[in-house]
Length: 227
Image (cartoon, rainbow, N blue to C red; front, side):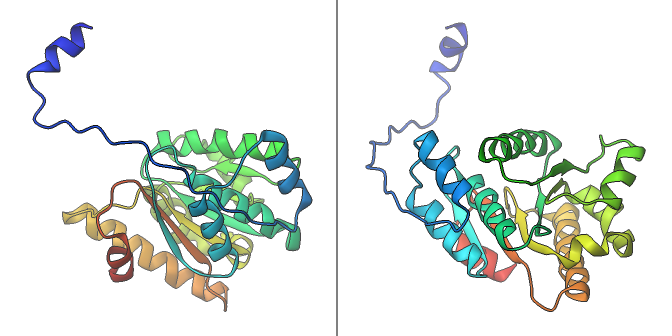
């Protein structure tokens, strides 16, 4: 309550958004374990989730811009789990700007894998991953590889020949929290993504699908098309 009193006279603008009716969609997965998981949990896919999954599995790049906690991560999680039904070696590269976000998603993905009963692996490869574990992940890449831009730049891309099996089966590249980064960090991130695309094209004739997420970006279509 003391916190609320402190901010009471410091709020510059306040607006209450009226509730809106949820819009639902559906997607019939070939993997019956996913359908059973959704049914048992009583989960109905929102329209942006079902549309996103449909686009991703048809090979189309997409950007999801919906509010926080609206289930954007379900799009890439369920898309890859469906891909595994056709190719057990299918993989996704998940790039998060912060290690805390990466660890949070690790927990969510692990939970979905466990509850669906699908044979899949998820690993975190970042600055907190010790050297021995990094070598193990590199030798046997997971289906879901979670990392950060800096670790991608310093620990994966320069040694891409050692990650060849991962890049050869890379189906999805997830860029979480896309923002208009400026200055040196902006050019740094931009060049990392360009380098990633160039290296992936060396190992694959068919480009992986980019799935980009944001709850705040302005004019996402033009932003992602331009970048």
